[in-house]
Image (tube, rainbow, N blue to C red):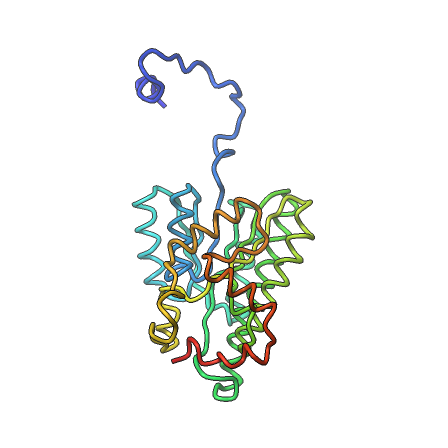
Length: 282
């Protein structure tokens, strides 16, 4: 930085003086690299935008190269952060392994992993093929397990880092494979948070409800399938989730209405909750 630039920053009557610690790593105070799966749409895109605004460099993971390139260019131009892109289908073990390698890399290490990639199935269990159900488990469970394993190994060795696993309020409800997978994400995240907190790693499960993104449209589900009160703004979901992460919350349920639903789900018998299976499927 030139003396003119320094004066512009500190003011004409302030002497910035020498750096009190000339050996200090200039990147030490930067928030580090965040890797986000499913980063080009919906909740993943909102995470990418808000983390870039916080100063994180990014690694964006998704299947579509074109959307990855567009998202990376936009975030770099808007926030001045470095953005890597990694095209991968997380149901493919070879491609998933490439993402695992990046998560575990020691060069430009990942300080925050956001496991966000996922999809849902509109039909009921027996109306879907077993291959469709298996693919959903591969994304919602297997990819989360393997990427979190890679992250925890690298982060616990460094003594810092964090993982946000995007789960769902569906984790508290009896709704087939999707809910069972999200219940696993919650249980896994709660265990990991307790197990690795002493090693400097923060783990949180984020449990939104119906959110205005492409997620339900890709399922063929209309907005009218659930009351308007239950539809959340995606930017608010991520903002509240990051605030809970900063507070070291283990489970984050954005919005008062879903906090109530999550609480009621523990008190109402499953056989009663199953009567609402059609909610969000029309």
